[in-house]
Every structure is written in C-alpha cells, then in structure tokens.
Image (tube, rainbow, N blue to C red):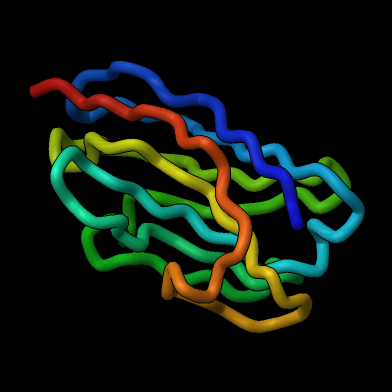
Length: 126
C-alpha cells in the first residue's frame, strides 16, 4: 500500500558512516510502524531496526545496537538509518519496510511488514 524508495547506500571503509533514507509515498506514512532489514548474499533477510508509527519507540538488533540509529520525519514522509562504525559484516542490501496495519507498536518480524522498497546496497571494505 505504501510505496518506498531507499537511497544513500554506497561503498565505504570500515569505521565510516552512512545515512540511508527511505522516501514513502502517500499520506498514510505517519500511521505505520517502519523498519530496516538487510540481506547479504546467500542469507535470509535480517532485522536491523524498527520504529513505531509515532516515533516514540525504537528497537535494534544486537549486532547494530549502539552503532545504528533509526529515525523518521513524518512531515517529509521519510525514514532514516544513521549508520556509524561500519564493519565488513554490515555489507548487505538494506531494505525499508512499512507495516500494512496502522497504529501498531514496535515490530521486528518481516511477516509484519506489507510494503518493501527496492533496496540500497551498502558495501563496507576492510
């Protein structure tokens, strides 16, 4: 229902930072919980971070806790992922996702998200 377009990926060195953006279409963005997932070659999608519809709650995978920050700007219909202290293990295609159901709280399962972007590649060299 929500159209999503990720951007901001690129090739960086270990220890560098990147800021990913996810632009959403439609006026319903502000009613949906949002999340970032990532998928490395040959692996399943992995949860990275999520944020509640009102931005009051966030949660992170243990592997990125303390390094990544998820945020949203409902006025701009945009979701962000600020990534710092990047490691080679962070290399993956990063996807943003939107909950298909409005006003739910924090979500971490891929099954809970009904809309997905096309992904943006993040490559961290060692």
